[in-house]
Image 1 (cartoon, protein in one colour):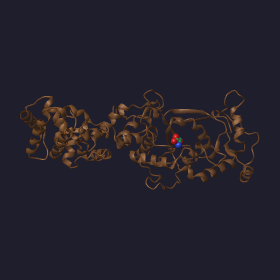
Image 2 (cartoon, rainbow, N blue to C red):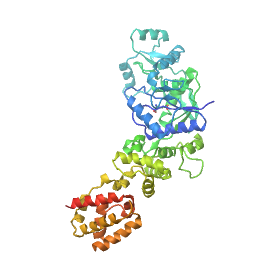
Image 3 (cartoon, helix red, strand yellow):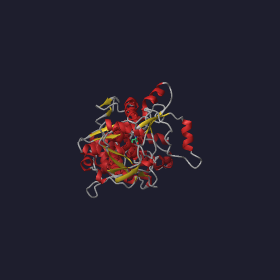
Image 4 (cartoon, helix red, strand yellow):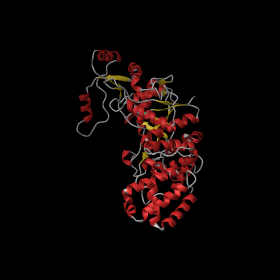
Length: 487
Ligand code: GLU
């Protein structure tokens, strides 16, 4: 048996961490077992699903690096694979065909009751909402029902629960699960407006797409009883299910936007690495068989993944731990790769810095250990950008000191006399000493004017680290700008 798994998002917004985790576990399981990972778009909820959201989710999966073997092509969105269409909104005919089979075999019936009648039944006799809608008194034959629908009457197609029994299956995460059929009453397969419902589409698609394993969120556990009934009535094999634990926020409530960033897109914009997000979300409900192993590449996770280490207890999303995982991956990136990603953030913020290999290596070896996310590069690199240099209000006092111009004159003269493009840290220390003697000042009356001439403010980053990263020509331009600010 070839393993075939699917990720089946409803395109109603960006991919959130819960969805990403579902996608990841399915992907890992497929890869580990030489199987296929399939993307199916569950867009039958016309009010909430949008094409735009589908593109967003596809973009997020691409960013994470979880490629699918079948589904909408990530670039063109055209179907790839033999079991398409992969968007449920384009499969209505397929669902109707299967619904007709169930009508003919007596496992489903047309329900001609109006919405009003059903609402009344739901409202019950005033003693609370009735969840089990009773079966209509009279059920017409499939043929008669079809005729009435063709002649314009409205009807839903409902599943007919034949017997009261317990559905038992071995959940890959939770072990034996028993779901009594009495949990549900005859349920709708196709609404009277012609739209099929999730439980029906899901079964038809999983069966026709030959899905063997379904890892999905815990909230679908109670749907499984309806789905097992449909499989049984269609005579189709039931896949193995694994229902994953909830992800909670630090307050132990279900993780939601209230808790801050929860979508992959948010994390991307905030400078998290996709490999770190994958690593971190993998740990929300799964652990490596190797003791204490928490930092893993996707290749390692593929090797190590199995469902026997999926945890049924809820997982708590811990941003501090995510930060640690991110920083660890970030520090391990090859310099070229890190620079490529850092540069994207700098360009976005219009921070212009040199791009030659030697400079980049020097700058990254200084800043890399201080970065948790790529976005941290913005603050770290900004003082090195000539276009970002400006003398801030906080420098006013320093500009007013009588010693300041003397310090700048000596600083400028020393820079001009320096023989190469850059000053090393010892060069800078030596120059600072020279300025001290030439201008006859020390302490803050020495350091602060130099700082203003280098970074535009009297406090902040360490000059002995920054100066060696600034070209002599930049330093000269800056001292001139500082003078202009004083004038
Ligand atoms: N479209 C469903 C969701 O986004 C998928 C349910 C399933 O995997 O069966 O929750």
